[in-house]
Length: 498
Image (cartoon, rainbow, N blue to C red):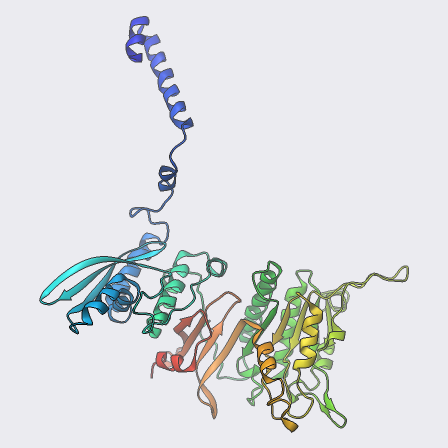
């Protein structure tokens, strides 16, 4: 009726057009200012089948095709049985007549941010039917399957987003949790490879051609480990300041030159690694106290572990490039300090009592090099270490290659008395970086079979198998297993190719 009124009042064609334009604009303004229902507003930003915001088109198509072609038996079928109501139904119906209800096939049709969409083929008697099921990426086993498939804690979303913001890496880590629940251990390594191939961050990936069987190592190989460990230490320290990671940290860096049980052990590599970590933290205006345990024991039965003999002196004499005019001018003494393990070496902020003297700045981070127990009475490091941890409060304490297990001692001091308390204290340190080689046997350290790594405080644990390329063209470290927790030896051995 509005348009009719305009036609009656305005005979001029030009004015009629202007009025129509004004009415159109007025309608648009009214429509824009009218609030939409919440459901409609939400649907406008939610991913759709045509616009999948979780995985891009290439990742989605490849992942679906790969899983359907290579992992139906070991992954998809167990997923349907363990995480959907079809598994519960199968248990109930097969309780009367075994094998009367069988899930014979499963294939993925879609992958969303939260779910796997599958079509499952079910054989009941002589009939075969297809049902659509959805498996949540953070599922727990359904009732009746929890004994067969014990559940695992879900992946922490904060850990996933911090480690990598790539959706494909998020998908891979959540899939690996489900694979570990259904005991499809070998598939976890394939999923890590899938993430790398599909443009992920490269979670758990190691460089090729490191040739760790050759010692002394190439200096570029050493620097590769120094940089990884230093970045992990800095990342963990930042997370600790945000209350997102414990202040009790440990890192295990055990490639051949760092392994004191091998004749390839090189103390210079240990010192260079400690220097790299300390400088990395000091560059962020953090004051680092680098500590080595002092002499332990009673009377004439005193000493330090052979691995640490002379380390405290060498630390102070090595080149820190801290002299005037050098790259780290003034760093040693101000931002990098040295000490021993013990509460008396924890420095807190103090104001100078004398005029003209600078105030004492507190230590921000403590880096403890290879704290370890020794054989004999009164030779446990736990006492002085726990006192130092208490004195440091909530400040980060990083243990580099610790060995806190009890050793043989007179009167059973390290075997019986307070043993559980010492075990609990040692377990309170959380791994924020680890690299350890795996060997074929305990009596021979060469050749290297593979490695177990955790490349950051919130990264997954990944096991690699070392493989030589044909015609001596190099070597690769191929992911074979991944988990959110430290892998067990029995599980690792099932994933390594013979």
